[in-house]
Image (cartoon, rainbow, N blue to C red; front, side, top):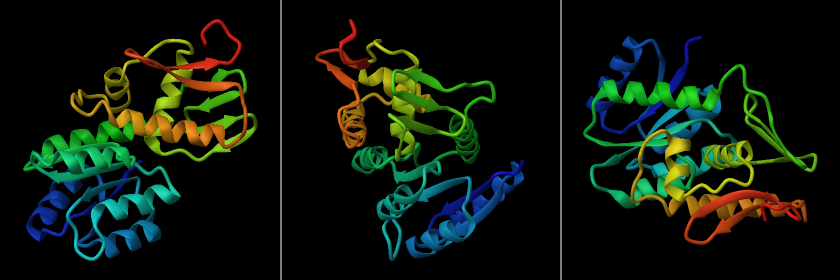
Length: 231
């Protein structure tokens, strides 16, 4: 299957270079040169993955990311200026799946694209993780809590999938980052707190379900059932 990518970059020379390289690597590539074009292309063509520059005319890249996350969990790799930690931090908090700092190697970008696509698809042999009242379908990327479907971002889904695979086990922030992004993101551990808080809010919207993401102070987070020995 040929994956379709949407490259959103206002710098024409870089955009053309990325298209040429990604097409040579076997991808179908759509492009947008500003935020408005990006939103329209995303709605019209439904790409498998979005490569999104943060600094865009008309609609900023972060707003484009918010619009994508409001309707779907399509994987997004953000492009930022080298050393701009605020953009990277905010992008990860908003649900970006990965980031790359400019300048970067097109070959590395292709590798990141393939890695993110693999993570987003999951394995064909995976079955739902089951924890009393909670079902995490790794193939469909769906989470059911007390028969209610949760609307989660890609990052929130990866966190609950990890925790539900090992109920009662404590994961540090850095461990969660490494497991869900497949790389070391030292210095960004606190982004996990934002994702956890959002995940808790969505879980608690269904009332008292008996399933909690518990903070283990000084250690990290774990998934527990109220009344169990793991609480």
